[in-house]
Structures are given as structure tokens and as C-alpha cells.
Amino acid sequence: MVGSWSPCTFPKLAHDEGDDALTMFRCKKKKNKKLGVEPGAYRKVHAAGGGVAAPKNHGVLNAPVSGWCHWPFRSMVLSSDGSVVCGCADPFVQRPLGNAAQQSLLEIWNGEGFQQIRRGVNAGDLAACGDCGLRELRPDPAPPTLPLQLDRGPTRLFVEPSIVCNISCYKAVCNQENGIVGSRTSKLLPFWLFKKTMDELGPGLERLEFYNYGESFVNPNCYDMIAYAKERFPGLFIYASSNGLLFYNQSRREKLLKSGLDEIVFSIDGASAESYSRYRVKGDFELVTKNLRECVRLKRILGLQRPRIIWRYILFRWNDSHEEMTRALELAKKIGVDGFYWEITDHPPGTASERFVPGTESFQRIRHQVWGYSHLGARADLRLLEAPVEVMAGGRFQLLLDAKNLGHDLWEPNHPLHKEFVRIGVQLLDEHGLLLNRDWSRHWLPHAVRPGESVRLNLELTAPLDPGDYILRIDGVLEGVTWFQDVGSQVLEAEFRVIGQSPISGV
Image 1 (cartoon, helix red, strand yellow):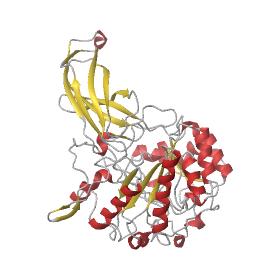
Image 2 (tube, one colour):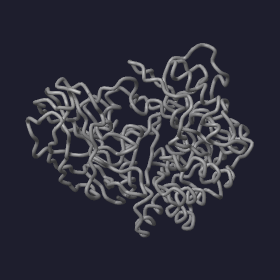
Image 3 (cartoon, helix red, strand yellow):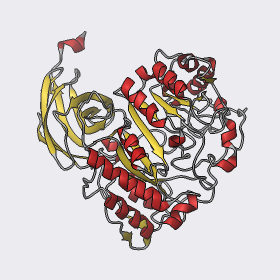
């Protein structure tokens, strides 16, 4: 909630003796052992949130490229001229799969281009993906073979309202000097094409990412586009990222806040005009911080819960000092934004922060407030009050627990207007801690839980059919986004024994 801060939201930054690292969170948690790479390791940084290097090789690579990727099975990217690509790491549209102005989106989704990419993913050969940086390490054991033609459309859609930007970020692939504007036949996405896209894909979408390359809010129809999507599909989660410079008057701010957005990110990479403008060339630090402050103030006056207003700060070599980061945190707290995140990037070449390289001890100290590794509401204190030691195979039993919201965002129960809601999830593990079922059961919250508040839950569960010793791992779930444990929250575990034999198990 706006203006509501927990002690962990913007902690004081502390120097460790002999290390110039920042101490952000000191939460103990169980390590989540995963195959492959950590979440966020292959995030694209682009116009509103940073820059990616211009591709060195626009052609298709000839040699097999091993890896795996979920993008061609879940996501689609619509450029400002209607060109469709698989992922958001194709800034110059070198691998187009169709054009929404000329074809049905679902036709493109199951067309030969997408099928070729999916075929390669299934085979572990991503040569057709060229130099795309979204690929992940291939899990071991290999994931199951997925269908080439899907009976549903994408669940996540990136829309590029504009390829034009009002500033020119230093050496970013999307700055005006790189010629990216010339790679589109239309600089602004037509409103009619946006509506066509939403009418076709909206029923199956879960998230609309209202940004790609360029500044989305350059498009004069941007607010109407968001409103159209939310009115047609109230349950669709709509997210936008912006440099924040165009919200310079009351009318624009009110249109933004009332448009139907669920979350808006302001990209501000510094706590002073000098550090901010080194990357945001032609930007105005005083103006963007004023716009951010006024949006937060107006949201409070209007009594709105949405959109959540976020400050995101890319760490570079020139803005990652203890003093600079501390000033940014203090300013964010004073303004009253809903959340603040650091972002790690390796672009432009030679500019990346050397203090916070992923995997280092310094990075670990800020990890839970790094974009891609954290989330606003995903932190809980779970306490088990009552639990049986033994249960009958296949029988019903109950767990009584208290869940306290340690985050700084409201935990929303199932709500018809929002897909991002919190539930309590229970995972089933064997006696050695091997995960048997990550989705053993889910449990609704009886009501919304504010930061600092607790809720008592009586979980109704069904025991496994096979006798033996088991472990229940209990955690919060921000549905469609993350398990709380994955972003640093502690989990609760309870051991129990299953006795007897269910008649069903012998069938």
C-alpha cells in the first residue's frame, strides 16, 4: 500500500568491515535447489529499464546451440508495426514470424515459424533462435516434449506502443543513434491493431506487458489502449515500464492512474542529476522525481490501490556507491512509492557494476531487492500451531497455522479483477527432502491481509496413499508470479507419518 513501510522495505545500508558491500536483508531461508539457472539470469534490459547491445550477428547461427526456452510456448511480442517475434530480445526484428496487420495472431502462433522454434527447443537445438539471449541451460533430466501446435494462445503478450523514445540512453540498442526506429515500418502502434490483437488473444492472456523498445507513453493512444484491454478483460494483469518523463501534468498523471494499469515502473538510475544523466541522456532527474512524487500523491488523493508505483534503479559502475544507493533508498521512502528494486545488467559493455556481480557475496546481500529475484508481497512468517504426527493413508487431516505478512504489499485473496493473488501452498516431500509434488494443495486466504497483519488458517489436506514418512513444506504463493521461498522468504516444514493402507492404493 502507498506510504506503508515495513522495517525490511528500505533498510539502512551498512558497510561490512573489509567489504564495500551493502547489507539489505539478513533473512535466513532454506536454499531452493533448482536445476538450471537462477530466475532473472536471462532478463532482457531494454528502453525503459536499460539497454541491450546491438546484435553482433543478425543471421541464423549454423552450428547447433544447446539450451531450453519457455518463451515460444507462452509468450509473444508485438512490435509497433505489427511484426511478431518470439521473444523480447530481438530488437531489430531480425527473426519475424508474421505480421498482425496481415494475419490472425493465432495463425501466427501456430504457424511454421513458431513450430520451428518449438521443434528446436524440444530437441535441445536453438540454432533457429540466432543470437537471442533469452535461452536457458537445458534442465537435466530433459523436460518433456511439448506440442508444436498449441490448443491455446500465448498467456503473456509484450506490446510495443512506440519504437520512438523521448531520450537517448547511453549506448542502448534502442537509442536513436542505433537506427532502431528505421527497423519498423510504423513508429507508433495503431489503435485499431492493438484492439484487433486484444480481441484475438485477450481471452487467453494472463499478463499484458505494455512496453518493449521505445517509450510506450509517446503513443497518444496509450491510455486508451490500456483502458480498452482492462475493460474487455478485467482479470488481465497489465504492467508498464517507463522513463517517467512524460507524466508532467495533472491530466497525464490522472489518465495514467485511472487507465487500468496494475503496475507502473519508473526507471530512475541515480540519486542525483549527475549520476542519473550518465545513462539517461537527455533525461531530467528533477522532472522525473517530481513526476514520480506527484503520481504517488495523486494516487493517494484518488484513493486508488492500483497501479502499484515502482522505482527501478539499474546499477552501473558510476551509481553503485554506498552513498548514492543510500540516498536513492531514502528518497524513495520519502516519496512513498510502493516498491523499490535494483536491477543488474551487463550492458552497455564496460558500464556494469563491478560490485554486484551475480553470484558474489556482495550481490547476495542485495539479492532480495534485485529485480527478477524479489516481489512486493512475497514475504511471510509462517507458524504451525497444530499438526498430527500420524495420519491414515488417503485420510483427511488438518493443519492449523498463523501466517503473518512481512512484505509491504497487500496480500489479496482471489479477486475477479486481479490475477496476482496470494494463496498458501503445500508441497509434498519424501522423508529425505526429495520433492514429490510441488502442487500438493492450495488454500485460499479468508480475506485480504495487510502488511504486518496475521491470518489464522485451518488447512484441510488429504494424506498420500502409500504408507511412510513424509514432509510437508508450507509456503506462500503469489499466483502466476512466484513461490515466496524463491525470493527469500522462510518456509515452514512439518514431518508426519502415513500409516495403514488405503483401499484405493491396492487397485
